[in-house]
Length: 328
Image (cartoon, rainbow, N blue to C red; front, side, top):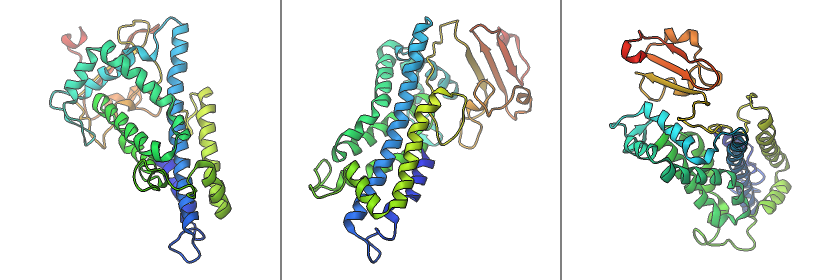
């Protein structure tokens, strides 16, 4: 969510010369309302993105159940994700892309072996957190902004710990809007209600900001409307790529390691899982743009990919000499 954060900051009415209280003619109340307005816009972008991801998991689950497969919330999907993540880690792995993830391998193994006890509740919690995220917009900002920010950051740190995927670097800027939300700190302290005169509510901040800086307010509102529409409309066009607009379908399809009817991909590589290198989702079993099958022989490291299951025949792509042990 870095592009939306940068766009909303660039369009923020709070930096308009007619509002900025550090410039002659600026107004403190208008500046406070404008800052709150920008934070509200980012909260709408953030929570709608989460909701899109949650709805994607629910709709895929319903479709899967109709076809006789499992839902996203059984624990098998997170089990499959963690199983793949363990290709990237070992008992000495305590960081992921430079982020501290202590005892990651031990925690992965614990959760992998207890899908019903640990991963099923985590699955329901993840889907609920994402799908119901927009409800934070209905709560008073002084009560909801900071707790939701810490909950979201913890959510993504858990993903880094168990899946070795770094969402924190890309989603943290969005949470800065919640942690620094003027509406959260306008009272005497955290969780203290602001005075009745403080123009910090969503509708009130929109009205006052539009009156003070109509062009910037209109541009910000227009972007947020386009973002929310994209979350809804792109659900029906899953192959469309219009980043930073998205329906946020990542990790939305239910998985099951032990269901032969589902296509699975098993890969091995000597490549280190480090910043600045190709990611495991850059290879030919993923959506474009990827390393193509005919390009695997040109990789500067050993790589093996076996795709199997489903209705298709097994397919092997590798740049190594297959030994009897590997072939078995």
